[in-house]
Length: 481
Image (cartoon, rainbow, N blue to C red; front, side, top):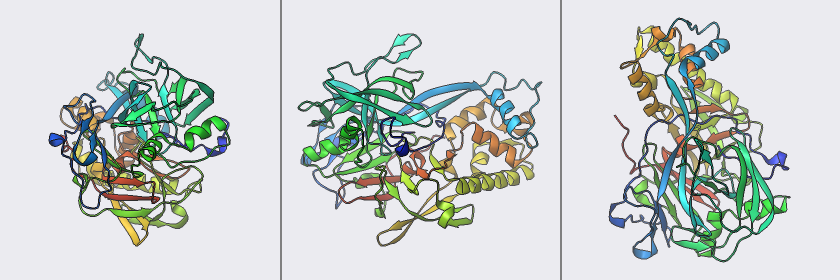
């Protein structure tokens, strides 16, 4: 999860987002774009530049009709940590001694390794002639690339940025769940940045040291981050050069392309970025506009009028956290969505009740469908320029289905509650949350609608008009059986 990019000295501007990476154990693949003719719909801005996910491409750029371009967007599965499931159950027993009991003699799951991974949506950007995969993050502004070979199993990974850097100062970034990084501001030179066939000039940060954020178990992970938040100032000169000119918006402006980015995130694939407008092939129905609120953090901040969870409706102060920014749209939030305490507790309570009902029916061995049935629907009503805009997430949006398929297979077809000694909905809900199998996290600062939300709704970020638009996403691969 990425936060508002600022130097370590600017403690007051750090977006505190304390959450872990979400579990994703499946292989990902890219969405193919048919014959290079991904046309935009009526009303789409022009010129239109598209970054497309395509299984056939190897990162090459296709020139399309009407000044359109194709490039690839990928979804990275980043393995962060691993543990034995029985160890987590023992920890859970400490947290919930009256609801959950674990028998030390139960050896069934002793050797089942559970992986805590993250999903990062990335695009290719060339910096000084070096092509790098960087994460697209609407929750930050800084453009930073890895400046040293990340080591995996004793082997140095490539690529990384080892090109020139005319150092202009020190910069750094803080990420609550993955610590952060430190680096140097590299001055720009003519046409030093390229993506989707566009070349432009922009400064960047070269990361020289990091803690957790760029540490993983695979050399194929991303090599940087492209903040796509709104420009924001800083009292640190080096940081200001980056945060005041986020790289994607800067290059679009230099090339005369409208400051609009349409995002299609696919939960079981990759998706597409559309530069300069939206692509009607990626959404159904009409785009609904939601008002953006100016804020000192450069967030894509929106206002919720009310939230309904499992039939219970919340409004007013129940929607607020400790930050003056109530709700943000953050493509870097791989925890799915994050809710302020009142809403998060309502979600947990609704989940416990639904799982109690399933257990009371005598269901002793849970399938994936049973697990999904225990997750409530959450409805969000946003403030729009012409009235409220209602959007919702359901059980299938919250459940990490592919990871739980692995667990179900380990159990021989279903999750045996007797073997786990789970006797209540509270115990089952607590276990799933402990293992990060439910894509909802608690957050004190504000509501953060991340990848689970963007995978449900095609989202258009319009910097020029300070607005964001939503419509149901289409064109993604189907849910695996």
